[in-house]
Image (cartoon, rainbow, N blue to C red; front, side):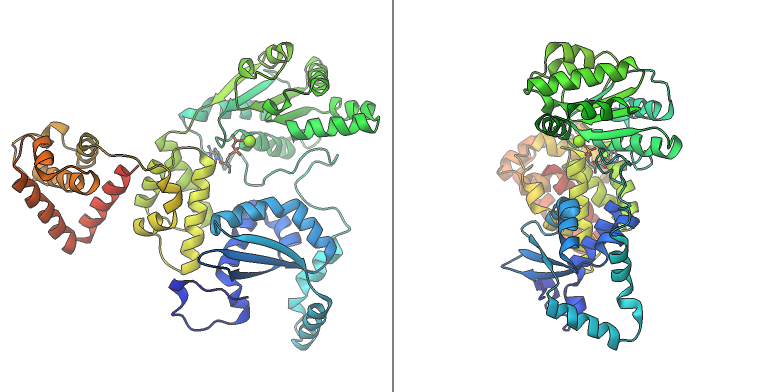
Length: 483
Ligand code: ADP
Ligand code: MG
């Protein structure tokens, strides 16, 4: 139960409860957000977490549950979510699930009695009592559909150029009982919101047409179910289950390739549903014609309805997503930091979210406000992977953009402060970020002398020393360039 980092070492000793504290508290709040209040209360509230540090920065989390049943349940249903979030908070950390020992249980019970107020045991009792009743997990009553992520709603989806078609199509499908395009085929790279949109469709239909049967599952699960049905010679009811739904959503169909009999089954299920005017929604990482492991007839069939692609998200949308997400996390993140992250983490939304989660977790943990310095420190490993060589041309371009001057002014002889200062900043950054010599840098700035460059570097250092907002500004530029 020991938890300590160097930045906390100077704090006074903390009580045992607090000890398992900030990291665990952060994980809990992330889990609450991810799983929704009901599921969280039922399954995760009674869990205690103890954090220990095994070597520098390797935080080991032990989760203790009151009963074996609960341990198995939580591990099976929430294990992945817990591990993923823990990875974001403590990248080298590990997790173990344990059951409260009988001795500890006795002690806990005694303490509960001693403490007189029944409050401490209330959540536990409630949890145990509710185990046998319906699990209020977001799932459809037939048990076939996979759980839905409560965060993946239309309200939480930020729309931009890259995903507006997919979003509009998803909304249309969710709003109408009579399919206008069938199937809806969503495709695009990983982490761009396909699964999010499918869950959003399911949530929306559940809320507006509660009678409609909706099944959402991954293609892998579909294959697994089918293979199982084959093994148990139960394919008739398998077919029935699928063919009686109003809306069928299969996620990541690129995985359906290969296994002939499953493809065959999928094809027939698909046709049967479309023929009966039931909505089918499919996602994949490629367009239908590029699904190379899928049979030709299925490929062409998949492309019959509306094919909507999700493009990689642009800068503006990345920024919008960060803003929405940080608001939801209830943690203020400076605009500059969000701009920085939006610039640097361009791969996909999942990584962007991961970076933000880790940052917020860290800030809450050490009780510091988020700054650019801290961001760079905390996300060093994520940012390093995108480091590369920087050229003087790029520096001039970025700096000119930033201060709203022309790139030509970087080379010009104009001495007005409005252009001279940005020029000096660019020279300073060129010295810092490139291996160029002073005369080389001078030459790149309209054939100036190396002493001009020295002067510029000194000037910027001087200004930075007493003007913190200027220093921040230069820092921001430096980080953006190290893109
Ligand atoms: P995919 O299924 O395309 O691989 P996901 O739907 O799983 O991607 O999205 C990855 C993460 O990014 C999810 O947490 C999702 O909520 C988030 N995300 C993706 N696009 C958006 C968006 N436009 N607005 C808000 N969150 C998004
Ligand atoms: Mg997905």
